[in-house]
Image (cartoon, rainbow, N blue to C red):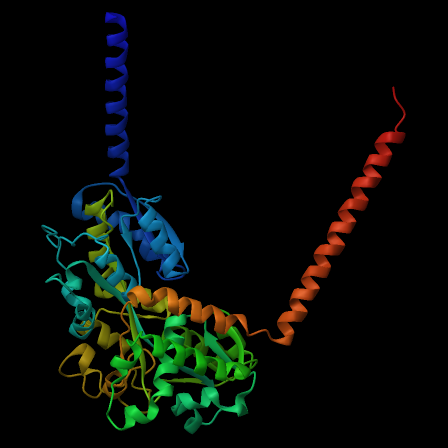
Length: 439
């Protein structure tokens, strides 16, 4: 019996020692979960050296990516991956806070400057509209990237007047010439705005009220209008829209401003002129930000990583690499973004503050104040999310273009031929084995 107790004691001590060593090893690892193509890889590679300089500690970054907010959220909820820092969109941040999945971000960096105040007050104010129960969102999330949803259009095929209104997306003239972002939230907001154009013009309702109306009647209305648009839709795109626009295969694309920046630059290199405009009726403005899940194993490194991403120089490098706009609004960023070769100036004071009322800066990346005033942020749809997703599935499920059917048919035929060929090869091999002379 004493021998058994001794063996059990050794087992316990061994287990505790292994757990301690495991935790020590985990403390030298930072697990980051971010959107694909959403950071300058050199910036990511430089973080360990910077962290070492600030803390004297070694760190290894394990970096993983996702393409859909809901997939990311599922992983966080199930806890199969112990991520330390994650970059969800605003409505997912709101949902995570409601589910008590996040921890507040401690901004005591000791001898390291706190770079989080570099963020634009405008973005902080927008995010804090999601606050509840006296819990401010900005205590739990730090904005990273932001932008608008609007119409990317080919100036040689679509007039400026047509691009000004979202009604053009329903114009039969553009049959099979329009791409829509494969995002139920963006498409929902657009359709609700268009359906209520007259009420908006009369001042009976605001864009913010419309986009956050998740009532049964609103969902039915959105489905009706999206189905009315379907003859014009050449595809629901997640990433291929930029290429189709630069090649002239689509004339308009309801997309995100960051994708529009990339497409405009790529198209210019092949002699195609694209432009981007946020519809006069209004649209949504969106934000992605860094959060620390409650189960994070390396909170310290996560905090320092978020702080590092708020440095002006890091923000500029990330913008150059990915095309999207940083939430950092320092004088250094403004100075770097001013382009005197631009024809007209815009009012970017809402973002950069006094002194930026008339600056020559990219209006796709930094919309004029008047554009921002007709935009609003969409909140989490809460209990209505399932109904909205069901509506979205019905709308998309009925869109089957002839070229899609051709691709499916060719693919099935190729698989059938491949299957037959494999069976023939197996039969020949079996026949050779049967007729092979025995030694």
